[in-house]
Amino acid sequence: MTAAVVTGVGASLPQRVVTNEELAGYLDTSDEWIRSRTGIGTRRWVDTGVSTGDLATQAGELALRSAGVDRVDAVVVATTTPDRLCPATAPEVATRLGLTGISAHDVNAVCTGFLYGLASAVGLIAAGNASSVLMIGAETFSTIIDPKDRGTAVIFADGAGALVLRAGSADEPGAVGPLVLGSDGSLADLIQIPAGGSRQRSSGEEAAPEDYYFRMRGREVYRHAVERMAGSAQEALLRAGLTMSDVDKFVPHQANARISVAVGERLGIRPEQTVSNVERVGNTAAASIGLLLAEATATGELRGGQRLLLTAFGGGLTWGATTMVWPDVTAHISSPARPAVALAG
Ligand code: UT7
Image (cartoon, rainbow, N blue to C red; front, side):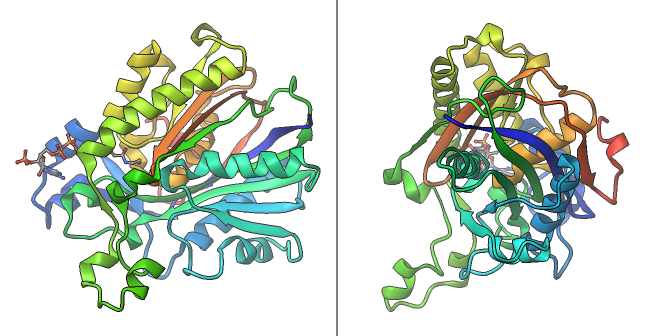
C-alpha cells in the first residue's frame, strides 16, 4: 500500500504570552497551583481579531516552505475552534495559500484532532485521491474558554502545527506507521460546549450565556486520558511490529505534564525520551502534536532517523497513536514574540 511520508513541518504561535501571574490576577488560582498540577508556566493567546484560520494559514505556509513545495493536492484542517460553525475552515485556508480548487475539509476530534487529521491525510494518499496533502492542526481555544473557569482557562491555549505529506513507501524516513484510533461517545459530556449546536437549538430552549463556553470534567478526563493514551500507544507499537526498545522519542499530546509523565511511566519510557513544550505553550488541543514536532525539530531535540511514538486523547471521547521514523527536515516556526532559536529554554 502507498504510504504517506512527512516532508515538511511548520508551526505558528500567536504573539501574546499569557503568564500564570496574569491569570492569577483575576482567577482564584496561583502560579504554584498551575505549575504543580499541569506543568504550564505560560501559554499563547491570540489578540483580538486573530482566528484559527489565520494561525492555520501561517503554519501551512511555513510547512510548505519546509517541504520546498508550493502546491499540494489536498488540505486537511483539524480544529475544535473553526472560524465559523459553517462552512469548514480548510477551504478558506487553502484559498489563502493560493490553492483554490483543491480538496479541503475539516476534522474535529478535539485534542486527538492532529492524529485524526493525519489519518485523513494518510487515507487520501493511500486511496490514490491525493499524492500530497497539507495537514494542519490549529486552535484558538482562548475564544471558547470561560474566562471565569479556573479549571480550563489555565490549561488551554492557541497555536497551529502543520505537516506536508506525499505518497511514498513505508520504509522511507517520514512514513507514517499504522494509526490506532478509538472513541467512546457515551462519555461525550466530559468535554463539551453545551450550546450552539443542533441539540440545543432544536430544543427550543434559550441557552445560558455560559453554555456557549467549553467545559471539561478534568479529574475524570485525566483518568481516561492516561489509560487510553498508554493503551493506544501499545497497540500502535504492536501493529507496527515494534517494542518500546525501538522507540527513541515519545511525542504525547501536551494535555498536562502530569499526564505525559503518567503515560510514559506506564509505557516504560525514560523521562529524557519524552518531548514536551507544555510549560511554554499550554494545551493547544488539535495543534499540540504538530506544534511539538515543529518546535522539537527546530531546537534539534528531534532529528532525522529517530523513531517516534505519538499518542493523543481528547473530547468525544477520542484517542489515538502512531509511530514513524522522523525525516531529516528543517522546521519553520513563526513566533514573533520569541524566536525559534530561543525555544529550547
Ligand atoms: O487535552 C485533552 C483533554 N484534557 C485533559 O486531558 C486534561 C485532563 N485533566 C487535567 O489535566 C486535570 O484534571 C486538571 C489540570 C484539569 C485539574 O487537575 P486535578 O489535579 O485533577 O485537580 P482537580 O480537578 O481534582 O481539582 C483539585 C482542586 C479542586 O478543589 P477542591 O475541590 O479540592 O477544593 C479544584 O477546585 O483544585 C481546584 N482547582 C484549582 N485550584 C487553583 C481546579 N483548578 C484550579 C486552579 N487553581 N486553576
